[in-house]
Length: 292
Image 1 (tube, rainbow, N blue to C red):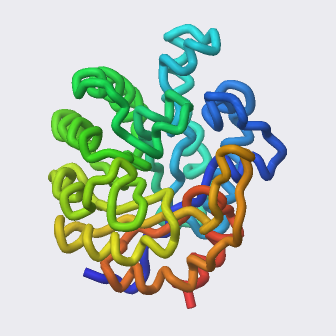
Image 2: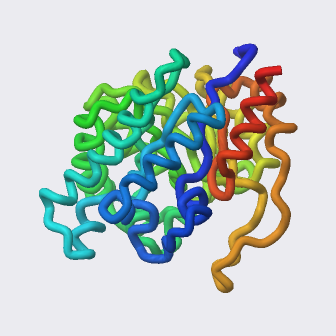
Image 3: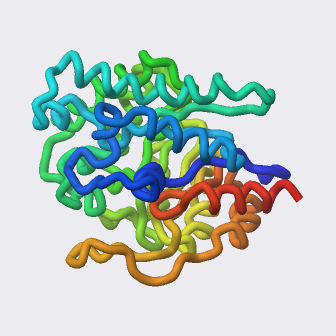
C-alpha cells in the first residue's frame, strides 16, 4: 500500500498563530480569530502551503454555534464564522497559481474540544449518543455546505464518539479522513486500537489513523490501522513535547518526525503531517524529506 511520496499535511494552527503573537488562552482557542483576525488565519494557511503542505486544515476544530453563543455571538453570525473557516482556506489555496495539487480539509474536532475542559483527551463525556449526534450533525452540515475537498475528523478520543460520527458521514455521504487521539496502542478513552479502527471502516472514510500523539506511537498505530481497515493511513503527531496542564506550558524536547516519516510511509501512511507544536519550518523539513 506504500507510495513513493505522501500527501503532506500542514501542522498546528494554534502554535502558528501563537508564534505570530496571538493569545489563544480563552475557550474558543484559535476559532476566536475567525471573528477577530481572519487575515491571520489566512496567513498561517499560506505559510504552510508555501512550506510544502498539500492540505490546509481549517480553523474550525473548536468552532461551534454553542461555543460562539457563549461569547455573545448570535446564531446566524456563529454559523457564518464556522463556514468562513473553509472560505478562508479556499481563498488562500485559489490564490496560489503554480499548478500544484492543494486541498482544503475542514476540521471536525471532538465534542470535548468545545467543552474546553480537557475532556477531549479523555473521552467518555457522560453524554448520550443522541447528544453527540445533535452536536456533530449540524456542524458537519455547515462545513460540508462551505465546499471543502474533504473533512478532517480529528483528535477523536473515543470509539463511541467515532461510531456516531461515522454514521453521520454515511448519511451525509461526504469524504473524510478519520484520526484518533491515542496513547500507545489505545485510544485516549482506553479502547484497543484494533477495535477502534474497526468502527471507522466506512466507505466515506478515505483514510484512517492518528493525530495529536507522541511521534513514537505512530508507526505501530499506522500498521494497525492498515491491517484492520485496508485503507490508507493518516498520521500527524505532535512535536514530541509534553503539555504540562498545571503549569500551562510545553516541556521536553521535540522529536525529529521527518526522520521517522519514511517508516510511516512504508507502513501505509498516505497522509503525513504534524499537529500541536509542529510549525511551517517542520512541514518544510518533512516535505523536503520526500522531495529528495
